[in-house]
Image 1 (cartoon, helix red, strand yellow):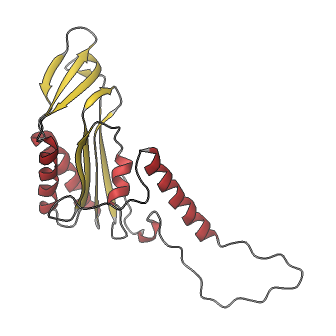
Image 2 (image 1 turned 135 degrees about the vertical axis):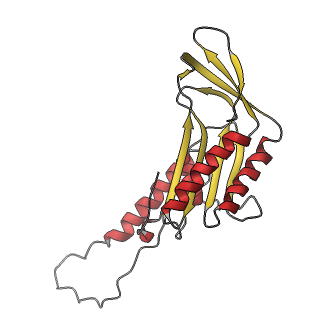
Image 3 (image 1 turned 120 degrees about the vertical axis):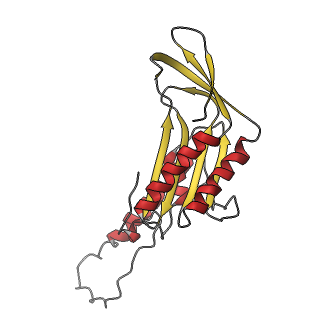
Length: 210
């Protein structure tokens, strides 16, 4: 979770400020002044953000495009690739964001008192469309937020991220509320099933809903 309230100048890639004070002529024989620190720090933050996106297989120069009618759902999909809430956060962050709340649903090593070895998720063909509708519903209920959400399918190991999302808002209370509502609605509506491989017996198929 990232709470950026009262820090509008802390956004990744923010333009460094430039002093307008008149310069004092240099004293002969003195070395030139070093470059201003804010510029180098901003460049370092931008490079770090680009590296994070590239590490997750993304394009740091890409611009997020709204996927639905609200214009505030920037990502809503079901994929077979590795997920990261940090990547979702980069997508929704903006200079208007006072808060960015993230969530990762992670594969745990137990269920119902039994030890889980691995999971496999299968999706209904409509899963991607349902994910978009879910995100749009949350955007309609929370008009100030922007949303990015992904669910992974296929084979997952213990510790892998199965659900990742990020919600940005000018204020933290709405970001928290919208993120919690988004996770609950995804669990309630998304047509996905999981096969759990247990260490002490046969695999079991269950609906990943609820």
